[in-house]
Amino acid sequence: MPPATFPTARWCSCGKRAVLFAGDNVFNDFLPWLHQSDPFGWLESLQWIRRATPKVIVPGHGPVCDMGPVDRLEDYLKETLALVRKAVDDGLSRQEAANQIRLPQVYPVPEHFRSVAPAVEKMGVERLYDALSEINGVGFD
Image 1 (cartoon, one colour):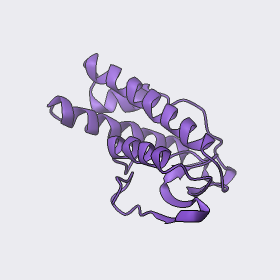
Image 2 (tube, rainbow, N blue to C red; image 1 turned 120 degrees about the vertical axis):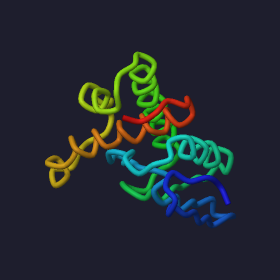
Image 3 (cartoon, helix red, strand yellow; image 1 turned 90 degrees about the vertical axis):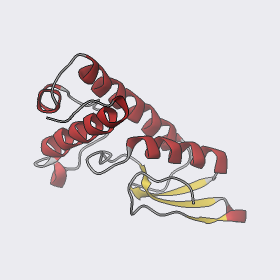
Image 4 (cartoon, rainbow, N blue to C red; image 1 turned 135 degrees about the vertical axis):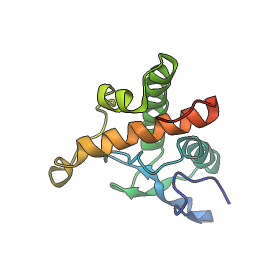
């Protein structure tokens, strides 16, 4: 089974029709939820999608799409990981990083989500901090 962004994310494809039901592995025009993600598994899943070459992707969030949103999501994840990696490398605590980092404003935030978006963004930074700390052997605070 290909890697996934979340432990519960699943795949389904209709081979000859080149349709991929990507679940939460693809977000299209919707703020990606980083706070429960495996960011490195997510990046692997996007590479898997690229190798699968679907013509149509049914994302977990947002409208049906082609490969364009996969590229945009990969860029977003890499940029976001780089921001958090810099915070870890600069010695910021998890809380300092969550309070200081503002994620790239690439995706629209729906009206009904605006009140919780800042908290979700902070939790996303904390999750990425934890993931990067795990591979760097840095303790948590």
